Length: 456
Image 1: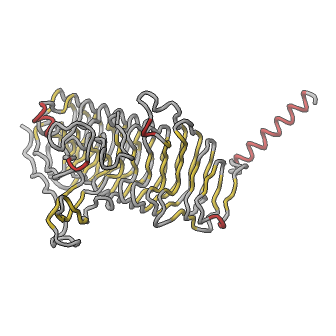
Image 2 (image 1 turned 45 degrees about the vertical axis):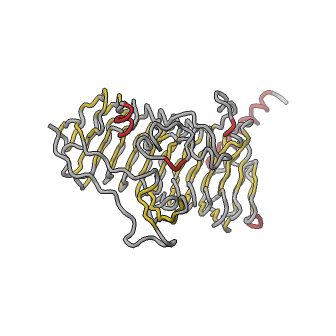
Image 3 (image 1 turned 135 degrees about the vertical axis):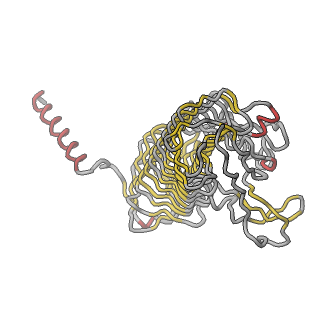
């Protein structure tokens, strides 16, 4: 073949590729799954599309790299399946370049789960030797999971969740498990999650042979559990049971009661960026070290307790920047060290709402270690009736506060009311119960703090 003919053929090939991209033909090798397979649980290892004319009930497992899985608007729906879309490989294998898109998934335990098989046994320092990377889940709707809507498992990295609507999850809308890192959560709508597991409607509970009725707090929209260096960008949170975004380190729960699921949590919820999000109608907006003052007595923790049920939480060096909070009871709560709270905006119609509260109870009082080295600058508040919405409780140390305003007036940083606390983690209240029915009167509510006097 002459050089000129080769060049002309190469040019024709490039024109064809360009025209295919313009027509939207980006996956010529994609395989179509037809409705005669809709009830089976399917494993795919190459690019695949679903026939959208039927409901898919068996679930999908993606086990190879370089896969585009396009539901084309199809519904994956069940009332008893465990995982809707599972992306998985053994810890000795890497996965990369996977895209899941245009899916409607409903009713599974987890509508999506991304996991590395055997991650609980990875030795320290070897957790990311065969890392995941460039995994995208986008442009999809995930509804009414029985547990977490989207679960990113331990030591998983390189996942992007983008343009998702996540609603009605029984537990958290999105869960970032301990050791996961370097993930991106952006432009999602995360609403009305967390009312099933330990929810506020309550459930019967037996302890030491005695029957109780237990009302729970429910769960948050996004749990960052010992997960690091993630970027939480431009999402919308509203109406989740416990709050919007909680950062904490699991205490090593159920070490003896569920040893098959236990593993040592090595890292805190550190170094995360939370930026550009809108949070509205929540009890708690962003809660950093959300378990620092919570009693975990019944969680069978492997971390050492310094008082019965109290272990240290770990969530440091996070940045919460340029977010907007609307009618949130407690906008940002900070209970660990070195966090940066800058350029956020708070709008509210009740004087009891607070923009920022820094401080933690038992660590300060018992261990003499108040929250330290917080940077609190450039925040703006428009909470009606609250002239000083930036407060500390139980002491603080070396806080840098400057140029925080309320209705465009620079205001100070002063002591606030001690916050009400639930008796145990996830437990709003409990009462003796002789039957499986709830006591009369409905679930209790924690009292709101009284309105505060202005800073002196």
